[in-house]
Length: 283
Image (cartoon, rainbow, N blue to C red; front, side, top):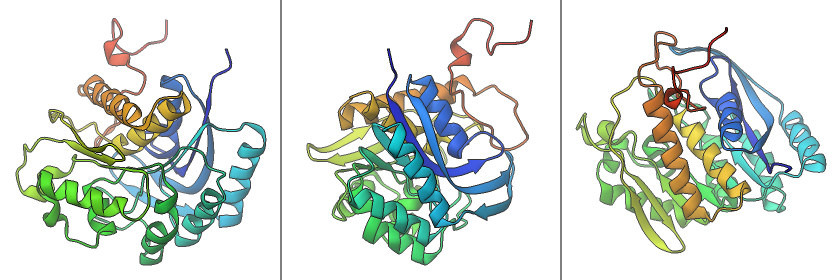
């Protein structure tokens, strides 16, 4: 049977844990044929990003057009778009109805709080791209930037719900505010990591225990990719979000004991941790 197709528009992670690489692994793990359009190239590993090259907006569009004209993706996700002009041209395609079941992961700040797009890019997200999204998936740092608030203002479940509702007022059908940074926002190191979903059916809180692991690089990319994959497979929005959260939780648990690199390692996209004997090895 021919698999459904999904498209990711994002940056490349040379370390393989996040970005385009994580998205394509997630698509493959969930039975979806992955296609891609690169927005930026990064030189990075598990400890640092050492260089970024942002691609020309026209070339980003050319990649997207090549995929749309031939492979007809059933769902699309965006990750790191790197510049305001790239956000704007991607939004133009979305506004024209050419990016179906669009999942927008607004990659705006690094895990250390370093901005990954300028103020013009943030405004382009708010005014142009976010209103076209079927699902918007900010983490708490990104939600704080988009809502123009300090991170500490989002240190409770009630504040997360309020932020999700505020972001939904910009136009997306559903908003998922991820709680992975709740400890940093609340000052409680072992805070749980609930995700808040606000959509046409109301508010849903997806509870999850916090996993004690340093191998969490690419969780946001993988969650949004998993949502897009399930949408391409025909799932409804809430079902896609619930299934995606379960997928990422299993991937975090599967990689908890890995020793890949000396920083934040990747997650277990393919369920190797559940396989007898662990990851496949050469004979």
